[in-house]
Length: 207
Image (cartoon, rainbow, N blue to C red; front, side, top):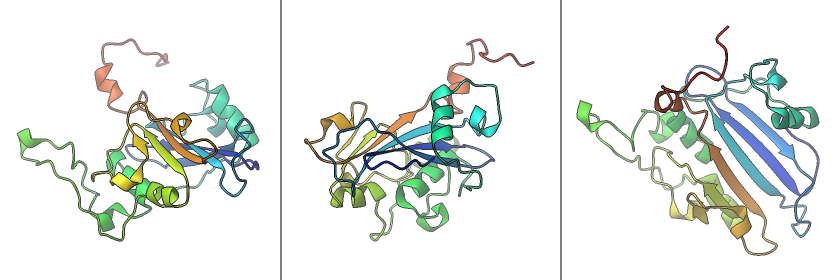
C-alpha cells in the first residue's frame, strides 16, 4: 500500500508457505523524525506469514484487523502479485536478494534446518559473489538496517547485510538523524504455530 509522504514508508509483506500469492503492501506514515532527508525516507518492513489474503481489505470478514484495514484505505493494495516458491525459506531468499531460488540453489526446502534423522543433511547455500542482500546495498547508501529477528534465507546472512539482526534489533538504536530500514517479523501466524499450539482451543468458530 503506498501513500505519498516524504518521511516514512511502512511495508507489509505477507508470506504464504503453500499455494497462493504473496501480497506486498506499502504505506507511508506522518509520525517520524523530520530530520531525515526526503530523498531517504525511513522504511519499516512488517512481515506476517501464512495468513493468506484473509483480511477485510481483501473481502474476508474472519479476522478483525483495523490497522491493516486503515493502511488499505489510505494506500494502494496489490492484487496481482506472484511468489517464486511455495514455501517460506526459499521465498525469503528471493525477497532478500531479489533473485530466483532456482538460480541461487535455495529452492530445496529446507537447508539450514534440515532433518539428519531421515538422511537430509544441514547445509548452507553458497551464493555467487555478485549476489548481495538488498539490505547490504541500503547500508552502503547510508541506511541503518535492522532485522528483528528472523533470517532463515537458506544461506548464512552476510555480515554486511545488517547493522543489527537479533531479538532486540530496533531502528531506535541508530545514530541520530540517520535514515533506517527496519524489519520486524511476526511468527504467530506461521504454519508451524499450528503444531506448537495444537492443544489450544480454536479462536475461530469452524461454522
